[in-house]
Amino acid sequence: MNDEKDNLTIGKKLHDARVAKGYTLDDLQKNTKIQKRYLIAIEDNDFDSLPGEFYVRAFVKQYADSVGLNGNELLSQFDTKLPDTEDPEYVNRVNSDNPKTRSAQRQVDQRNEKIRRYIPVALVSVVVLVILIAIWVAAAHSTRDTSKTQIETSKVSVSGNKSSKASSSSSSSAAKKNTKKKAATKKLVFKKLTESGSNVTYQVTGASSKPKIKIATTGSGSAWTSVSANGSTLWQAAQAGGKSHTVTLPSSVSTATINTGNAPQTVIYVSGKRLKLSDPSDGSSNQVRVVTLQFGKSGSTTSTSSSSTTDSSTTGTTGSSTTGSTEGTSSTTGTTGTNDTTGNTTTGTTTGSTTGY
Image (cartoon, rainbow, N blue to C red):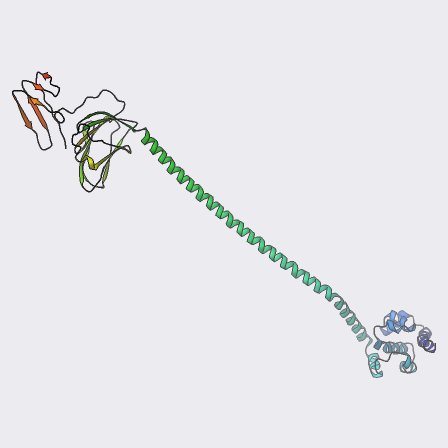
């Protein structure tokens, strides 16, 4: 009880001295630069409300000096009742400091306290900001990679489509060409009209307006061939094995003749279709062949080859036989009569000629 009374006495003593001086708490705060709430705490002996124990003695001494009391004597009188955290010299040094400096120090302390309170918040904010930046960078990188992949995929797709289209187009063009060629070849028809020894005549239907005749030589030797149309020679030459030559017939062609000096080694193509020659049916030589092609619709056919190349002739009682030049022309003339192979007798003069190569 006595300690409590003494504590009340120091606060009461300071309060009475202030009232005696006619100071209000606001006046005393202005003079001492001590906050009003601390002055009230001192008068109420509530020293725990002061900012620190080492401020208790300094504030009490300054309060006492401001209201006309001897601060040192007051501290000595209540020495045992006040917190003894600093020696008197420290208290005197604090009290002798400029009140403005103490106020500035308190402001610095308060500012530091605020900074200390805001440090955790700032650290958390910085961490959150760093995380957000990392997420944004990762998202941007992922989006860029995705876009790049999509662009590359599109390029590959477009290239693939172009290649497929080009391949399809090429295949389609080649197929169309082959189809046209096959169609043209299929509609071209060879029909054998007549055959007389080594001479053979074919009716050609389905050919183009300007048919092409290709002469190809096979084997290692050479073969002499001539091509004529409508009675005019278009080409003739001795062609080595493995070579070929193409002759375009005129649009008005009705008949074309191909003479081959080495038929087994010669291959004939008409408008791309091969003309397959069979050996003479009467057993004649297949070395020299005369192939006549008639273009257009079939009609009456007159053989231009005489019987002198294939038939045997018998002269009458008076007649002569003459052998022609090296080109192979034979003629037989009878004056009184000629017997043919059937045994019939014809009165008059008969002349036959055959030209072969």
